[in-house]
Image: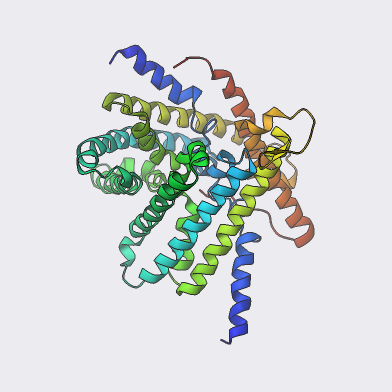
Length: 195
Length: 212
């Protein structure tokens, strides 16, 4: 697999098909953690690493367990089980091995299981028929795209605290409208690379 | 409790799900599909039906097995129950409504990660008998369906000038409403509207929001 193709895949996942702005996934966490810069950076780091590992793990399980046994139709049950199990294991290991890191990032780990993107990436990997390396790059690109979205949003929302927003629109409604505006800007990336 | 009282409380369970605890506009849970599939009324409706079915079946199943599940492993167990019912829905939709499934197949699969389903199973069905759980699921599912149809209604009317695929308005459509951007705008504005109606006429405190 040549490097150029992988780079294209990465850019496509991170910018052109950004999960938040063009596929509308992961909104729950996106709106939940972007109130503060600190939390969104913590979430970004945790999220991207979990994403790459779970993409790899699910690819291996799909290729070497599910296909030989003809279990393709159980992909939803198995992928969610793998992700939940992996997150739980990471939680326990982190608590033992590096408590400092655990107190910084542990709470984000627990939130990750309810994120749609973490499940969407393995499902898309399967339906697009990506190879092992491609799956990992796709997971990494999606993670970076999500992190980018969260950091942009957090920096806007910190300023928004000072703005005079009509009462009915305070909080979530105005955040939705801002996300809409950022999505409009992200549409400029379409056509950057033709896959 | 007499029979008539039972009926009243079931109706209020359904009402709660639709209005005061509407999953999208009030509790602000499971927002992804609210934007993703609502570029038309038809897609929003099918998605709502799928969620309604999964929510009811999950609530009933959780309620039936609630005494056999150890509290420590309850969340993973619920996840597997949800995933099973989502698989059932996913495969049935792939078989029966193929054209719609082709457009939103991925989002049907992702019902499994909707916080609203898990939260109803955890907060309600794990503590209640089968019949109230059924009605709670029904109420929340209808509330979800209602929200998706409303968002879809505005987006399709403004964005394509049609409803359910049939042309209604004969003006130049606002293309932006069916793009991703329009989805965010529509949800934001409708959420603000719900808040405004709530504070203006019912004296409520606005959406709790910010969950996941």
